Image (cartoon, rainbow, N blue to C red):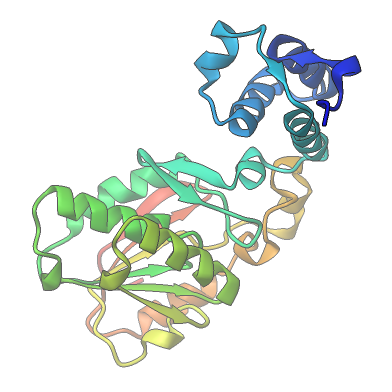
Length: 256
């Protein structure tokens, strides 16, 4: 069978040019086009610029411009490629979880500075699982005995927990984490928790008009910290709480 689309042959260079024009309303138009074409071709971005003459086959062309069309409707790049880098590792993401932010990497550093052998650690609102998984991987790098710890990942969304479990399996740490579905600290009742890591929803409804987050799950965006702190105040002894909100990464080491 002859190759389809010969009359409309498109090179990498011409595909990127056309895609950037379709995304001209985005400040990141060229970068977005580069990332999506590299993803479709399963090549590096460097490959695109060192081989601009390479021709796309008709399947690659259709797939690429389908993704460009979705990007033009404000779909995040991470949802289109199904992956996002966090702390130097790739994580699977989809529309059921919040996309990991660079700021959240600061939470990891603060957590590692406060962890002690024997701690029970809870990742509340785990989403993709990137926080608890990264903590475990970093502890492994530091040669900690992971059997000295207990790790919990909690989320109210069963679909988010499915994503977290997939990432934990991919990174080879699923055997260390107990995944619990429920509202905030309720699934942990009766447990002594030493460290809570919380990247909970902290936006208000007015913030949801921001185009960059319109496609992300509302359940993971709109604030629940007041309820969370009320629950933490009832814990005895009080855990260390490291959390992210509008002001950045914060630590509470006593009564909240």
